[in-house]
Length: 173
Image (tube, one colour):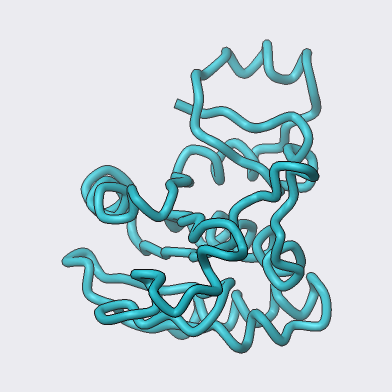
């Protein structure tokens, strides 16, 4: 199933899973590109509480290479991520993974107070995340093959975030 939230379809900010409409219907309603359709087909978004289930689904139902992106939840007031680094980097990561023909599990870590808590479960083993956005490449068995975080956080703009994500994807085929 493929669905995209209307606000972000044109710039790939808010791709979500939903029911499929015939391609001709989609074109009549709004200008989708082939890359958006491909990205949505292998892009699953889950909450922190559904991470394990989402990871199993990614590995079982979607093609390799497999990437997991940990990002901040959308702010209910604005609909955009509360994290400025995520707002800048996440659309670039989505594009790079889609261009690589990979699958992406996007995990929303929670609102700002939940993520900033030292008790957040993703801050502890086995993940031990230091920040968001964090991009992991995992093998078919689910084992972590590589990770970037500070590089995405430090990207000055979307172009630099794309370059960082592309270099990571190329280094971890």
